[in-house]
View 1 (cartoon, one colour):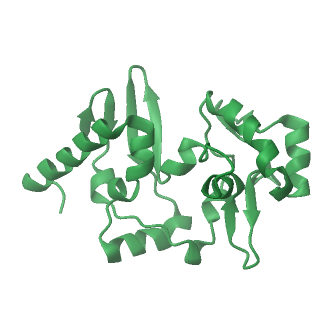
View 2: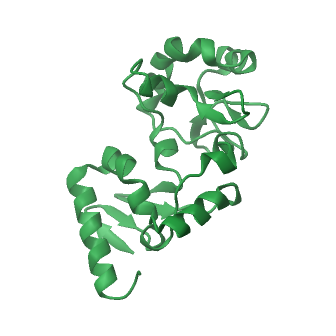
Length: 194
């Protein structure tokens, strides 16, 4: 473990390799699992505000779920998560003509139609952030739907922390990320990571 400020980072974030391979997985992380994506309380308002921008891209089923229960709900573990359709798809999931799923919010962001990228938990995946009192824990989450990303990361030699530079900066700041890079260099010198 490495600690930077009040954030504890698992060594797996440095050791493991990861590079999304959307062509192989078709965006399975948005449609697999037993609950929606974790959402921070301050993101609920942003999700509600972006609805008018992405509404026409959402499926009729997703719109019905949102009208019935809103953009988020509390799952069985007590976590605030995005609402889901048919016990799997995030309500913000859309599909292209090739059957590849994508996030309607991210698509709108990339087109300059919103300043909200998407929930930070989605942006950070495969990292999950845990709260432990005054500390946050940054952990690598292994999931079989991301096997292609693991293999591509191995092939291209891209560690998780480097693949997720942008969302880590978004979550913790540029100075924090710089310290993370320095920690990685020190871990290399000491032989803890390759």
